[in-house]
Length: 430
Image 1 (cartoon, rainbow, N blue to C red):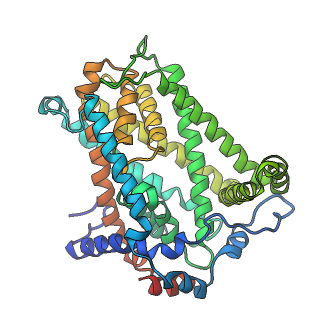
Image 2 (spheres, helix red, strand yellow):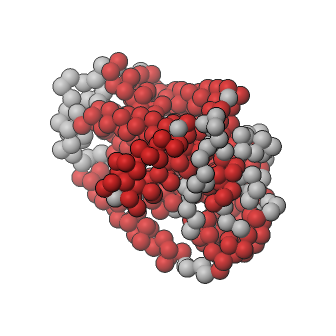
């Protein structure tokens, strides 16, 4: 059958190769994760204040021989990720117990699905495909200043495989997959790709928390807000407060990132004169981290990349809110677009906390908490239960399908068929 992008979907052989790849991926990433993802050049930026990502990143990128050495001693997956996996499972079990005792259904009763309007649901699925497409392809605007000739197919494949890796690997360890797959050992180094991804995440966090703050102020909520979510004695009033705190955190992160990009010397002196007086090693490490993320702001050097990226970012979050609004209508909830924006914002903030595999637990808890601000308890547990289940399960299944489509579109990205440093290191780590 044709895939969502009009390209034939992966056959059994392709799917089998993809599953085999995801099983061996953690060991393949040993050399990548052993590197400092935020190492940057110690040289100050050029006089115009613009950081040179290619130069900065290349100075920290390992040579082929170094990557061979890093990949030489490969601990087992259990030894390297066993603790993370165990913690992730414990968190998932804890969320399961808490949600169960709180009367918040993970699998709603059949009556809840009897009210679902399936035509609206399939519109939700179609919008989900577009959301993931826009989310993936806008990354090209951050990569083009480094590698103008990078293909859209490679960007899409790396992104869609990454979304699945985040679900399959413990405690979001799959975040490293996207920069690992997109690097070419020449223009796009691991640290440069990580910088663009970090900048993307900070901008996303700022945009979605601004949307959440606007929705919290503009959309009427239950008054008074309930003192519990289901049977969980967690005051719903804590949810808006958490949203505003997240907004201030992302504002601070964006300001820090911008200062390090446009005035790096001043920022270094400021951190050294404040945090450095208390704990210099921590100050130096914090400086390197922020510099690495700030390097991803290179796309702001001109409107050619900045305007399309910000436009597609707004389109991404607008489509996301529309998708969640349509699903609310499908499930029989009297959900306005403003409520959908609030639910989207609370969910985006909620899944930042550690969760079980597949973001299990944090996803459901955050969505139920958001619904509890606007709907009565019986609706939250009834139609809201169907809403939470369909929202989570649809995104989970689509992420798996999208990874298979990505593999079919560009198998060379997963095989490491790239020139230069990466192709040499790939043969070693595989």
